[in-house]
Image (cartoon, rainbow, N blue to C red; front, side, top):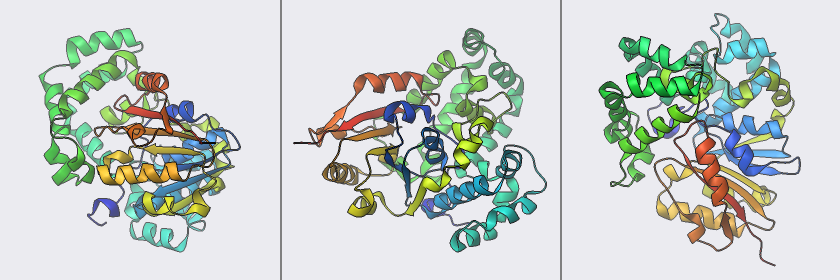
Length: 362
């Protein structure tokens, strides 16, 4: 696979909590939503509310190939084969299952997956660079296996809080956080271009430590899918799976995947396509500010506002790069109360939110 950040799969599992987008956007059957593809998880999760259409955009074609094969898997498999194929369970017959899936792929996507079949054999759910890092760290933490087990098997938040304070939050944990907060790791090893946009004065380590402390003291880690990825590098049986991976939602998603239109292009170019975005009335922008410098960020929001003919709903996440799009236009109206609620309730805990609407002038 290529080494460029935008030529390889960087995210393959669900690193966000799409319940936040659902609360922010309150999608209906009349809504057309423009969504950043990423791992494809959010585009699939949002189908649970039966929107009219989802336009899933990513500059990285391999992330779109990942979403394409997930869609093909929904369409061609039952839930038992689906969870085995993508990697929720161990499976020795992915090559046979792939024969059912590949016939629904475009020639370009099929060519990619044929060349990278090793990713399918290992399970596409955990094939991203980020997931590989988490799995590697989970293996390196073998000497803390007992502590991880005790923490992650806590049956109440109160028990978890007590264990976190007395046994977990120590020098070893803080050293681990300093490693994953190290800018060198993200710029030179992961080659994450967004790391260069983080303000130099922003203390990544303290931010991550405070947010992990909050998560451990407010969310039950045992059932938290984001915490499972962080501490195990995978989803364990007790985990409440992301929306689109739950068995009870499989048929709902399966019957609606054709509503997703996948586009490989920059967000700027897509927003110039009036025919395409003219019907969009909701935006799920994920953490695009991590990949857009101030000039590009402002240009993107300027085009979103310019395209607005009907009232627009939006939900944007901020990780380490925080922005204030409302300063660009008085038509952008943020819902600070809901933003605070999502900040407190979001299972991934590490994000702040930019949520609201774009008004239409009469």
